[in-house]
Length: 229
Image (cartoon, rainbow, N blue to C red; front, side, top):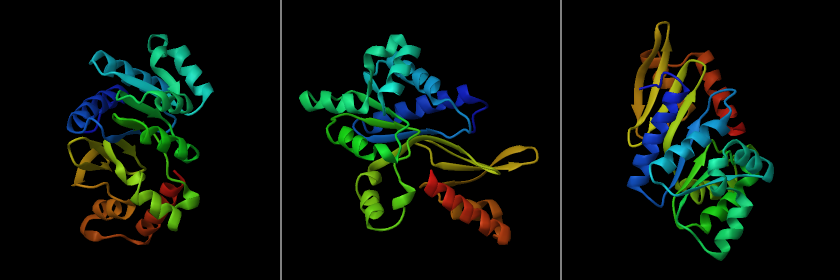
């Protein structure tokens, strides 16, 4: 079900990630909270602390030195396991590890670094609120190669993706759930075994009536927005 607030969403993500790691302790997983205006650092620090309390050895990685320093300042108890992507690449070139890696907010500009981190690591990797696909290469041979290769290997452990009139949620090992926003609140519309694209979601929300012109335009807008993100 949908969480009542951010803390409930964090709790759902923690339990889903634990289940995912039990299923594949060396897998590549994603965790997403896509709230507008969300400050992801406090959320990630709480997730890392909860995982440590559960006995999980981990490293928390950020894209640059500034973000790394900020995280160390805000979480001194975790400072010893916080580093940058470049720090991780240097350390694993000397001694590859198998601890859990949490990669925070990796963008398309970090694609090569993330690929290097994953290629030299023997344990599980979790991408938190990442966006490795580049709209500039959304179509064409480069995008196809990336999707067939590196990007295709990621699985969703947890996702909470609010939209204008619906919310998409996934908590491993459950299927993807699409909730429609009705006048009296959110109601489960349908489930999907794989993450639905914008058109599949729009068709499910439209029901038997099908999509009108406005619905078709919203699908196009969501597709374009997806490329940007």
